[in-house]
Length: 383
Image: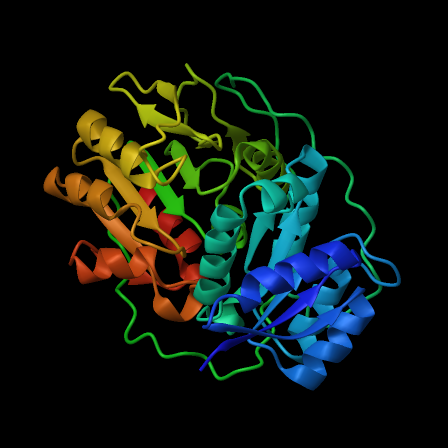
C-alpha cells in the first residue's frame, strides 16, 4: 500500500514541486496539500496521512505550532523543511522538540538543478519515517497545546576550553513527558542496572530522533559527571553549533561543538561538527578531519567509535541511540573486541529502530535500555 503524504507549504511553487517529486514514486501517494498550519491540522484530521511534510514560516499558524497540535490530536510523522542557516537550525530543533521526526534542507536551487538527487533523498526520507514509531516521535510534545511559543532567546556562543573549576550550571529545563496516544510498544525485559566501572570515555552515536533523545539523556547528568563525553549526531554543518549551544544551555554538564585540538575533560561533552569527522587520540585530544566523500555519514559514528577503541581499549562506554541505518555497528564491534561496553536504546522508545537494532542483531549490546533509563544508568555506571 502506498504511503499517504500531506504536503504543507505556503509557496505554491514548492507545494507543486514536492508533490510532483513524491507522486513520481509508485510507493507514495500525495493525498492533499495545505497552505498554512491551521489547514495542515484540519487536513491531517480529515485525511489521516502516513507522513506530513511541513514548512516553518507560514501565515495564520507557523509549522512548529501546527506540529504541536498534530502530535496532540493525531500523532503523525512530520518531515520539516529547513534553511541551512544558524537561525534555521534553531527553528528546526524547536520543531524536533515539538514532535517532528526529521528534516531536510529547503533549497530551491537543488530542486531545480539536480532533481534526481533530490527525488531520491526526499522519497527515501518519506518511506523511512513512515515506518517510524509515532509514539516516540512525539516524545517531547507537551501534554497541553498552548499558544504559539515565542522565539527562543539565542543561546550563548560556543564555549572554549575549561579549567578545573567550571562555573555553576543552572538546573536544566524539564522536558515534558511524552504524549501517550498509543499503548506502549513492548520491548521485552529491560537489562539489569549496570555495574560501576572506571570509564575514561562515554561515546554516544545517533541519527534520526537523536536531537530529542540526546537532550533527554544529557539533562539527567550532574555537573560532577566524571567521564568525558563525545557525541556523534548525523547533522549538516550549519546545525551542529546551534545544537551544541542548545544542549549547553539545558544541561548541567557543558556541551560544545568540537574543535581540532580540544581536550577531553570530565563534565564536558564534545559534539562532532557536521560535514567533518571526529577522532580521539591516546592523549585525550580531539582531531577534526575533513569529511570523506566516500563515507555516507559526515560525521560518522563508526569513525569516532573506532578511534576510541584504538585509544582507550576497554575503558569506553558506547551508547547507540535511535537512527536510520547501521552506522556505529562496526565501530562498536572494534570497541567490543577491546573489552569496552556497548549499550543500545530499546525499540519501544526509538523513533527509528535502525542503528540500535544493528547493534542488537550483531550481538554487540551488553545492555538494552529505554531512553528514559539511559541517563540514570550512565550516572550509576560512572559515578
